[in-house]
Length: 282
Ligand code: NDP
Figure 1 (tube, helix red, strand yellow):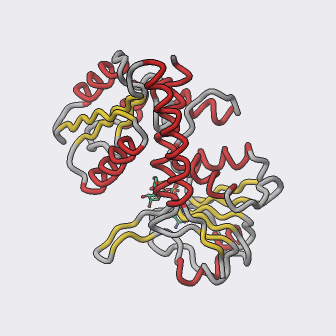
Figure 2: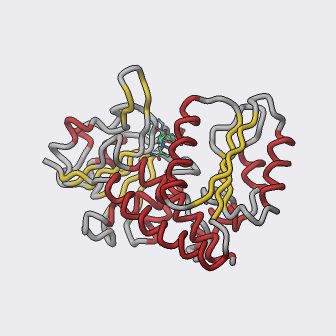
């Protein structure tokens, strides 16, 4: 029976540390650290994520500024807002909640965020720094949280075979880069990978970021592996991960639950990115 990796508990600890930094910042500079959250349109899941992020700002003594634009706002409207926020001294971090409506190009919009205010770590400059192993960039929140979850097991990462299923720019690719930086041997799988379970069965660390409910089954997992479930799949019965938790927990050594695993860590890392950015820019 796998040991549960408690993302909720770890996130609480990190948010406590962030609050200490944020209070120190306010005492020294006479203003709070500020995070601007931009949401375009009325995607119901985005509304939940934004609400959670604003709540976390309150918990961490960070000032949140929310901007909700109509779904029919133009790309130029979104970019104009970002430019305004780039020049606003009360705003240390900017987050554009994804997905954006189809007529707004995600890459173009994200590229407009000043890299030093890029709380999500999606800007091409910050992604580039991560891949080149350069310090000082903002690291994408979910992958940054995943590394902390793996480290919380006290199992070494160096020399381990890490298999990442999924190659998105926001999860799969950056977590692969971070695992490599931590000296794992990394395999990245995707929808064109043949015989997927040949790879997953050899993973000491398995990260599932696919977006398909119960996609990773017990027969795909190496006994004793660290299994990180990034998936957030909502249906009428609730929130489900990419991992068939009920069966995989009997094979894995460590496993994250959904909810209560990667999700809370993503939010905690967003706050950490914002406060670190504010501190280093002053
Ligand atoms: P994307 O849809 O952008 O990427 C999914 C990836 O899975 C793609 O690379 C795709 O391959 C791959 N894939 C799809 N089908 C298969 C298959 N049959 N075999 C192997 N690989 C496959 O998703 P995201 O990375 O944005 O998100 C993944 C999941 O994580 C989602 O459920 C999302 O909601 C969740 N998520 C959770 C977060 C959290 O904080 N907990 C944060 C961000 C995301 P290909 O590239 O070839 O299409």
